[in-house]
Length: 231
Length: 261
Ligand code: HEM
Ligand code: FES
Image (tube, rainbow over all chains, first blue to last red; front, side, top):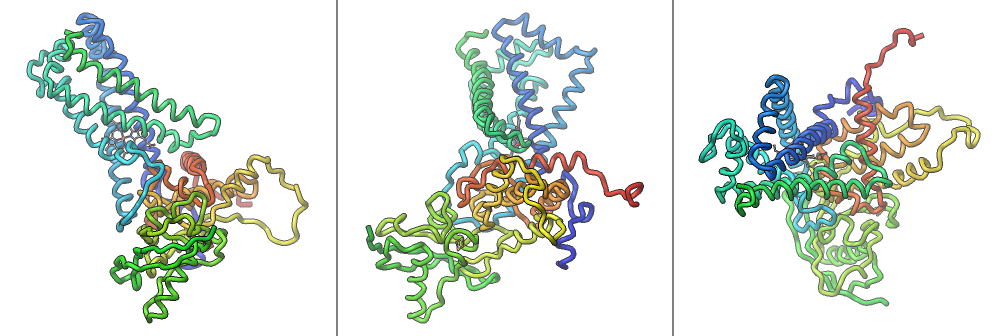
């Protein structure tokens, strides 16, 4: 490299676009992560209506199907597909760069602050992707459901979880969600630069509280069905 | 109190950048606990030279923790098991008699091994050249205090400037990311008034160079911060991200219409 090239940093010539840069793709991951976690949290809150019984639950499901004359759910689906797609793309492309960055590993490496959650983000993410596909086929489309009745969400919910293997997969997927969320919520604040000594404890606390709440309530659904509390 | 240790070293040996490397085993006998880690390697090398063998090549210069030249992965930790310590400041009292010590070079695509434990950290220099500087008129010095600097910014900039560029952050990161290093340099200049004119082109240029050199990206494991001999914090990475986001959102190409004079 010429000395002149090294020292005259012209942004046009040197800086690639936002989406090709490492920090830019991290920001995509964080913003889509907020959308996905935001959805998961609201979805969990909505589903607690299963404890109120058939009528309120099916009424809620119908409301979601018909909001804005039925256009609402498609707008919402578009946003979710875009967010999931972008998140998966950023995760894959950053992970591939990261693997390339360390072609030869260590014989003896000792980690100190990395957590189990932080080191398994890629794998918990892949399990979540598989789960999302299954979940849609199970309770939205119905093709992976033993006794699907279109328009009777409550029935599908209860009969779906009566199958122990299906419930077991739900619970495993929720534990993966917990790992992904616990590291992800904290990590996204760092990625977006929301760091300040005054609020750092809160960042960890928020991640832990949100994870416990979402995963705890979600896991309670299949257990409640299997235990006969919801029937 | 001084004691003497007998150790077994497992050292990465590699003739040059092209050669295949491998681990070799060496005894290190009668090593005083008051020696530094590099002095221990000196003793082992004396012995190798006496036997007519090639001594172990390792980088070092100041041997007092300020230049950032030394550095190898000792027992799985960059710069060894002690916190806030460079390899040259590590003492043999941190080891036990009979220990097996694995010694490896920094491992990263962007840091090719030159020989044994020495890696080429030219990538760091090229990142600095891409934007880690300020443009300032030299000449007669200004009056002191002509530029007010808030005390907190001065302290934070000073903390960031403590980075000696040793590369332990890259070595420790599971992704071989250089973001702790780059963010320390971005922060050190971006926090001070002298760094403002180039603040937002700097962060984009340095990140672009960092990516082009083949470093990975941060996934917030925190290994860099845990291993840094100078205690550089991940808050710097957050600051770099913040500046990068702002620089990208508000980027406008240079125009010289009315202002061209
Ligand atoms: C398509 C499947 C998925 C894959 C392959 C995946 C993979 C990843 C990877 C590799 C990271 C980066 C780890 C890090 O920076 O520490 C990440 C971060 C994250 N993921 Fe996922 N994930 C997936 C699905 C999800 C889902 C369903 C959610 C939300 C419910 C989610 C939310 C997040 C969040 C919030 C982050 C943190 C972003 C940041 O570090 O700034 N991910 N994901
Ligand atoms: S030799 Fe200078 S820091 Fe270790």
